[in-house]
Image (tube, rainbow, N blue to C red; front, side, top):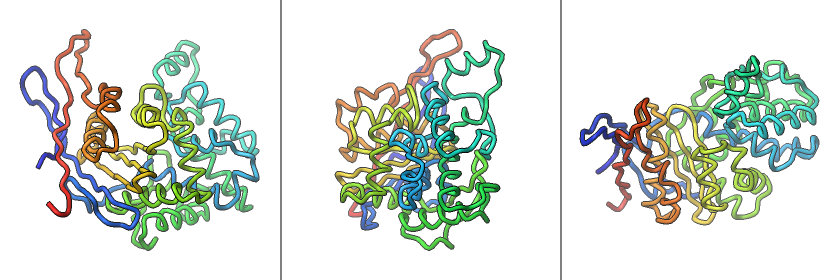
Length: 333
């Protein structure tokens, strides 16, 4: 059974990335898998839709008048493009806090032109450039909506993180005590779960959105209506959701994680590239989605540069290609 993404240079196989994935329905039944579907790993930014759910359930979006576009940024790992910064700044103003209150550090924007513009102007990146700044503003908004002190909102002992942990556990269908905790790259808590439970969380969120439940409808609707807020120009999350026009919602996580929810099919997919390589993520997830018939051949063609990325050298010469070699296995063989 194929379980890898291969990198070919010329005619020679140069590298191979091992992939694990689980495909689960909203009842928790395994529909398909690759490799170890029970592999425990960190949810990383794949958890962001569930970290945003309390904003809806607990009334924070109503209190502060947050829009769908702003909620999408809370679910996203944005590129730091100008519109991303505008939306983040709008959220800070509505919540009544300064960017300095955010616990995430500053890093150069992922968007190449914005990064160049900063350098040319002799400016340093600020905290809203952090790809997780939307999530952090959402956490501060949740704290303020409950009347909690925002100091230390990113730490595991803070009630914000306890509230989010309970939400992740609810959607994944596991006791919160069974979830491992770590510190994410942005300084907030991250959650360790088996891939099968991550997939179940996405399937359950998809089913709830399909059923019209407010919290799920708002979160999923924000992502599918504003996919550019979830990632950015030329990135797989944005391009995939734009191409499929709301048929699915998708979220990348660091270290080779990717998750997809499909409201129409009430399915969830959670995938991990074992060595954490980002270059293997898009080819792997698109191969899986095509085999499940969740994207069409036309969709795959439109996303070809993600599905089969070319490899170039520093002179701009085409020297190779990244290719998925993945075969899904179903429980019945």
